[in-house]
Amino acid sequence: MATVALMWEARAARGRGAQLLAWARARELSPAPTRREAFTAPGERVLVITWWENAALSADLPELPPPPDELLARPVHRWRFERVEDMPPAA
Image (tube, rainbow, N blue to C red):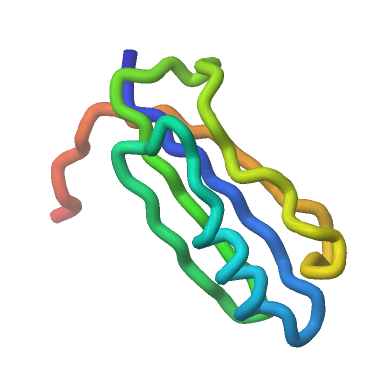
């Protein structure tokens, strides 16, 4: 088992970025992840990353659902990552 990070990224319909962010932040996951963060980027993009300790990459973990179509400029993208051993800082 390892730490797994789930990334959920969506691009909001024009002028709907704040609404998409509010929608994503209001979604509860059960069980709750170890850690959860939300980010925004130019182009009205919203990114949510959740961290799950002691999970397998293929584990059945709760994910954010797709938002209402009117909030989206394109379908949601999702990725799963497994943490690798810490690397020393670059010299």
